[in-house]
Length: 331
Ligand SMILES: Nc1ncnc2c1ncn2[C@@H]1O[C@H](COP(=O)(O)OP(=O)(O)O)[C@@H](O)[C@H]1O
Ligand SMILES: [Mg+2]
Image (cartoon, rainbow, N blue to C red; front, side, top):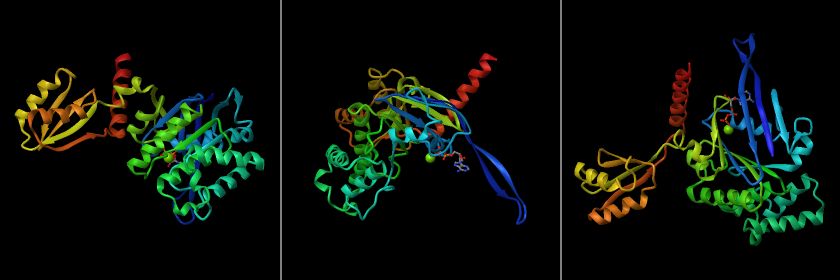
């Protein structure tokens, strides 16, 4: 198990006042973060840009030293043994970093394996196994520049596994990827935890990503933990109810009200509001197929049906407000 307690990182930045005059300013990138990652678990670090996610990951991967705090790796003091820790962790980058385009998939893995000092026969076996695992065994000897985005992403996973790490860190792994590649990557990540027993920490600013993947979630804002828990614990606060934009030809108030009455059976608390030509439906249950069936039953032609993604900013604001209220209530 990985466990960090009260991690803190302060940067000193030089700021220039004028040509001759500069001063030092302290930036508290991480103020107080405590978290745990267990084998076989996917842990999410969720926060808006600038929340301190990357700084936390850099401390966990021993790329930078915390200003203060504790870090235990399987019970051992990690801050005293960074070299030992490096052997047992790895990072999978999003996008196309850390992969050499001119080299083949095999050569890329060979290069990284050599960096870890893995013995040649063992490395050869490991590469074959990993390429098979990520479904690239037929592409082993092709240069990476001929690969699709999804194939490059799968090679990233193989690269991140080359030292057989116990824990894997992913910093915004799906940024800039299209929906299909994202879905593929999500499946790979899930399988690393469930089938290979890896402990995974993933940062993201997508609510839907952590909601879909993570067993346990830490919400960070301004370098501090705002809330933690399982998806269920956080649902009411963070993953606000599901919202759909639903529009049919000739949408009007009377269609909305029959929708309302039919929805009652599924979710008595559901709300339907007519906004322009669309009904905006808020509910705690999944409604995609219900709405499609509703249209068929009523002989309506669907013009629009999609799920609205709640924004993380809104969730953080809402949460801060509710915490404030609670604090006032106690005082
Ligand atoms: N090397 C650095 N020097 C100074 N400030 C930094 C440095 N790295 C990050 N910061 C600041 O720390 C805060 C947290 O950054 P970061 O950890 O990158 O957040 P996130 O990954 O959640 O977007 C930001 O305000 C950022 O500007
Ligand atoms: Mg970041």
